[in-house]
Length: 173
Image 1 (cartoon, rainbow, N blue to C red):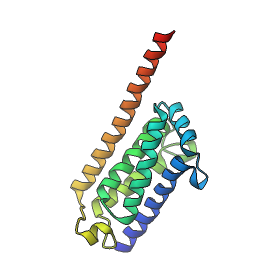
Image 2 (image 1 turned 30 degrees about the horizontal axis):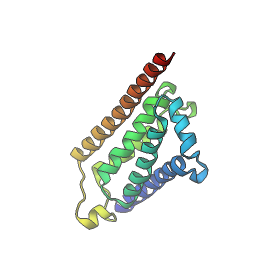
Image 3 (image 1 turned 180 degrees about the vertical axis):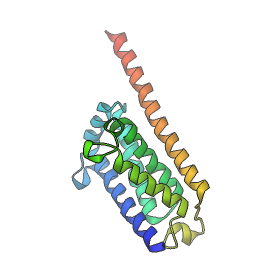
Image 4 (image 1 turned 45 degrees about the vertical axis):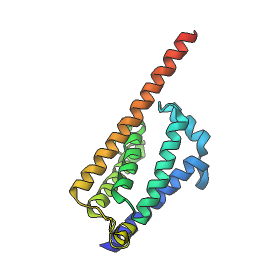
């Protein structure tokens, strides 16, 4: 079981590190910060640069801590927040299947992250080595609740920012 959790943490954490650095630096064939910012703006996540930074930093930092098995429920919460925001702003309208641009992959990642929050990172983790391992149903629920709160906050701030920009545009016309 410990080997399985280690592999799960390394694969998911490593892929999130890759996604985050694609957004921030254009690594691994990614678009980089400016293009990601523009993409976020087009999805209604204004200001795009702030949201792109938040997503990229969260994916990179939480992916790193997840891979290391450090603050595992917190890492799961941050990554769940990013995935829920992606579902809510981009994928939901396309249905579940990834072949249609849906949220299937995001949902699988969220389930795996919450599974790690409940099961814990395992013996081969920094949480275990430091004696700070937290796991169980309460930690799963806490990670999910924090992920939901983060996603709702991100989109609420974007909606507010978009409304302020529309008001400013109307005043200058």
